[in-house]
Amino acid sequence: MFSTADTIVAIATPPGRGGLGIVRLSGSAAHQIACALVARRAPLEPRRATLAKVRRTVTDAIDQVVLTYFRAPASYTGEEVVEVSAHGSPVVLKHIVIAAIGAGARLAEPGEFTLRAFLNGRIDLTQAEAVGDLIDAVTPLQARAAFDQLEGTLTRAIAEIDAALFDLVARLEASVDFPEEGYHFVAPATLAQAIDEIISRTRALLAGAARGRLVREGLQIAIVGRPNVGKSSLFNALAGAARAIVTDVPGTTRDLVTETIDLEGLRVTLVDTAGLRDTAEIVEAEGVRRSVGAAEVADLVLLVVDGTQAPDQSDHDVVNQLFDNKVLIVSNKADLEGVGAAPAHVGAVPVSALTGLGLDALRARIQEALQLFDGHPLRDRPEITNVRHAALVERAQAALIRARDAALADGGSMPEEFVLADLQDARAALEEVTGKRAPDDLLAHIFARFCVGK
Image (cartoon, rainbow, N blue to C red; front, side):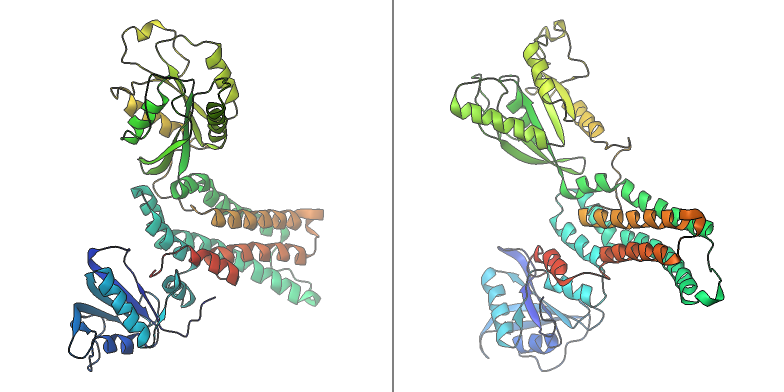
């Protein structure tokens, strides 16, 4: 783990040139170092912008900057923080960082500012992870979901469950601590009912976890079908750009082509694949193998068929090959004359990748197909979006179920220590969600994915 005794410095804005660039300092010497950068003797006023010049020498200024001082603990990290707003020149920003290091600062590690905010109690671990998710968000729905967690929605839900658990644990510990009194502070039936109520809360949290994971991580849609049915044309139409080569020659697509799009707030990776057919050509055969592999791991498969032709055995073979996947059939070439004369594929969505006919309906059907498992559409702000959080809540729920069963075992005569142990396991899992219990290697793993300066 990082040393928290040092004053750290880093560029907090993205690499490259821009109108503004920010250098952030945090630590006990942040104010002193900032004043040294601009040769200022008077102290900075907290939460007031101060105009000054950063100097290379006593007489040679390199930039005019604005210093903003945040006094501990009322800062992002909970420490003394100074943000230096300069012009967004990489040369200028680098000079400010080097000067700060020369004045006693240390270059920050990735995520070290947010780590200090966590260690100083400004945010919990779920909120810290939400900071990273908000930075990484590429769709409005991802940003809203991340900001919702940053506001503490999941933290409050976990805290309410933990408070109810704490009450049960306290009463059971009282019974265990005073066995000679022969008094039970909670009856087995009442205990089991209370545990059931907590289990229902964990189930409610987990109900949207699968949908939340898709919001946070995105999903993959593979476009498959026989050669020359218009897979690449549909890929380009959905992507809004001519990413895949389109020709009349069968087998044009040999490798997987991907593009990320925003589908009603969901981050979707489209995968264009080689046409599925038997071939002796080595390169095309490898492309077909990769196509099958992409379909196997996709969250949804768009099976493209030629809408001007009646379904034949090869179409049925492709459908059978994808039997275990969630498949949506797309009938392409709906713009061609006489398309209605061919028997329709059951449940197919008619589109024209060439003219755009039916694409809005296809997008709507894709959204319907991705309503996961319980028949409910994606919520705007799911409470659990992180696989780690879901796994820990599932672990807590399993411990609660064991505790409930133990409370009712043998007509309620099971020693209370058994129930207490399971309830404490449930609490430990929930505390790991928010970071009350978090090993150093977990913290290092989480914060290492952050950018430097955050």
